[in-house]
Length: 106
Image (cartoon, rainbow, N blue to C red):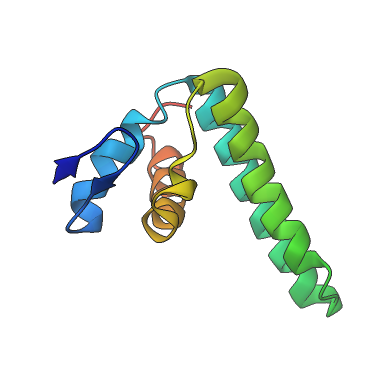
């Protein structure tokens, strides 16, 4: 892994995830991520239940909205989504799972 001022290259998700967790040390930020992820699940469920396609962009706004507020207001850092969009999305759901199983405190 090489580090730059705002960029880093990760050879794999397993290499990225510790960096991702380091960007989510603030509990309020993690809680907002968790709420946003629950909202995404709810929006997707509503899209399936109602056939309403507008729930899909609502899911994106909900997920990223809560997460970005967590970063800008509480964590005081730039979301990893901007530099590592795929790994960041994967990290969101692995962290969500880790919170659900008690591996990461909420």
